[in-house]
Image (cartoon, rainbow, N blue to C red; front, side, top):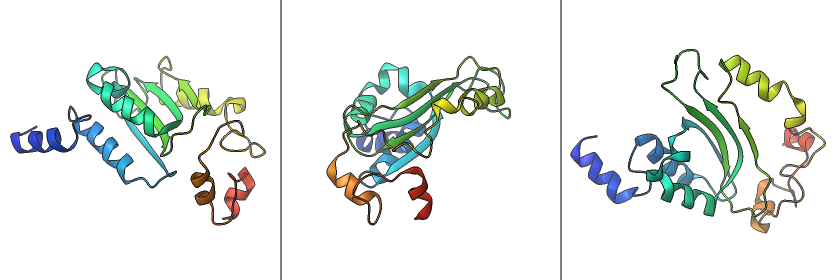
Length: 164
């Protein structure tokens, strides 16, 4: 990155200044309304490198990971080989304690199709329409419950989501 951009990122995004994908992630989160969700497909490096430790800490303090697919290499046929290692995730902009996030480690899959089958080919890992979302044992902040749907006092069931 050039000098002026580097200085701007260092001053405005100290926790994600190392790479533009991390800056975009941090900026997207900052624009997400309270209790809203944001989804992204990024490089997996933010999950492991020590240079992103402050970003991870801030993220886990103020958001909850709703679901995460650790895709690893060979996830997209257009991008071959081991070079690009990806992760897809949904963040909820609320600190929900004891939330049961859904994680899938798909790094061993040999293709995007195989990884897709691993997740969607096993219905027991996907929420059914009869289950609450999020799981009922999660503690959801009251202001999130009231703002989720125009007239819901709790998170709607699967069928109720489609009615809105």
